[in-house]
Length: 460
Ligand SMILES: Cc1cc2nc3c(=O)[nH]c(=O)nc-3n(C[C@H](O)[C@H](O)[C@H](O)COP(=O)(O)OP(=O)(O)OC[C@H]3O[C@@H](n4cnc5c(N)ncnc54)[C@H](O)[C@@H]3O)c2cc1C
View 1: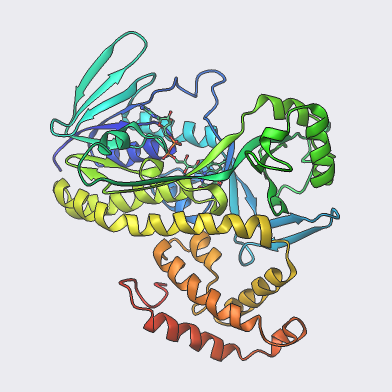
View 2 (view 1 turned 30 degrees about the vertical axis):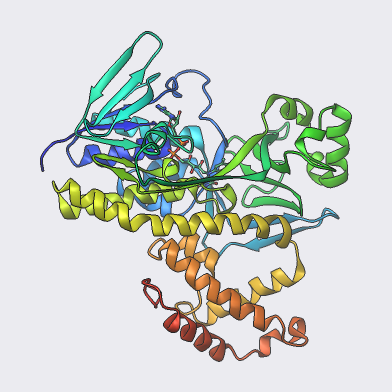
């Protein structure tokens, strides 16, 4: 293979993994990151202290030889642990016995990826901010504290996140399609500290959710015994909103009213609330991801809201899929960029849409009785017909061989069928008497007649 001189912009999760893949293919790889090295000193890796890592993210990390490290860094979360208004707790498993999503530190994972990349010979240049790109010359314009520099490369990858400078440069090109939208809600990170004896204050093996319609709190465990808590709340408006929570009294009143049981475990709430910003939740879609020899990947190409826990997983899958094209087409970068760049967005658009839909599900529906019954019936169908009815959440989270686009499409059919089933009289007491074989046949009829260019059978 012909060695290329490759520049990657952004040493976040996706840029660091991509650097490993490209270095393994024998290329000369330099990563330019605008921030200082997060491994030196107390530098935060940015938003969301921990993340949920699932199959699509795990697969590439395993492929590049990091599984043994991951196993020491994760806390498996087997399901949603729901906290209702009365403080009652219920566990809703995410999948089958043995299936879990994994809480992992963003900074820890990013450091692991950078260490691995460096050990292979990738060169990281910190405090180098990309300002502009000349796509005709494949040239970067960078600045750091002391001077500006110009770097010529064979290929450039933009993995510089949701507010990408590389994408901003592409937006100036003719026929670049782009959309960006914000939720009315923002998020703020808070903490449930470990107990005095160093234990977890609440069950560590689940993702805790306090769904309250317009407001929602979630908590993911950290290895040292604390939980990172994320509050989702409208930025403004009547009632509870970030703009209306300013004094200690207002903040405490809100938590006492809406999340009283969580408040019991949050002794540092007021300090955390004041210290951490309310951040926005953005959705970005773009096309094409390629201009000449430059390609976008990860959040730079497709940023999504965090409600399916897939942004990073999807970005890692971008690298995994791109690598398959590299293995197949070798030195033919024109074909790699064209074919990957044309095929991948269908899947990233699908998960971006599903993530928005899951916001409604998480905040409004996960606590509702008929939703729980739907999930129970779907789980039963999956037990009876493991390869003929796979719930959408499982397709996305635990079956990386199923594409996001397929999961969205089949999920819509499943939804349509479940809507009809839920109209059955006395469904709550009679659901076990449903004609499950006919339900499966109906799904398969819809899949067969559904059209589109996506495969009609589960690719398992
Ligand atoms: C609250 C929240 C919770 C989330 N939870 C999950 C989850 O549970 N599971 C999951 O899969 N995903 C989750 N995500 C999504 C996940 O954080 C992103 O999808 C992921 O970080 C994308 O990685 P990236 O490398 O593409 O971008 P980033 O992580 O944003 O990295 C981009 C990097 O580029 C650098 N950079 C930016 N501009 C420049 C420039 N001009 N020059 C040089 N460098 C630059 C930045 O400093 C940064 O280091 C969550 C997101 C949020 C906001």
